[in-house]
Image (cartoon, rainbow, N blue to C red):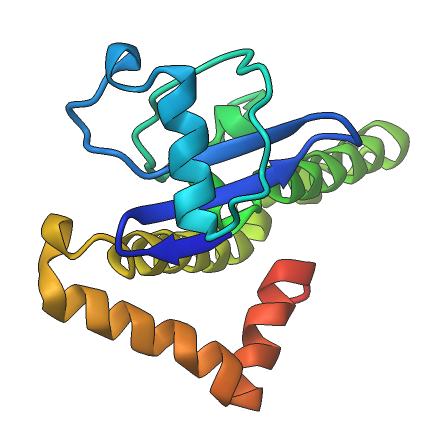
Length: 189
């Protein structure tokens, strides 16, 4: 992950030979604005690492980073889980974890309903999921805003840039802030 005057970049490894990169860009940008060479030049610049080599870019997508929560997460006998119920920006790295929590909670409720004829866990599915989900939505929104605001000041101004950088500094300077961030990353918050 890198934050620079040129914007935000994140690398998410997808195995030993593949990575997904996120590059902050203007909402008006499109694929024509980002040929492969520019992508790699920006990655090197934002990561401050000239040794990063070009590789084939398999896909270029422009994704507005947004959060969505559909609640309640059930309607009658229809239950929503994962991306069908909620989206979080990839900056917080919580989408898969939240989806697995939903499915685990729902599967236990279904087993209880089928094996014990007890519908209480199914009836409270949304109430069980939502408090945790809202905490991680807040964390992901905070992380996204912090990373994007800390970079290019021309987007949101110097004030937001410097307050975002102060939040990042706190993660390194405060044991309490670092511990809390770690709890969110591990999924124990």
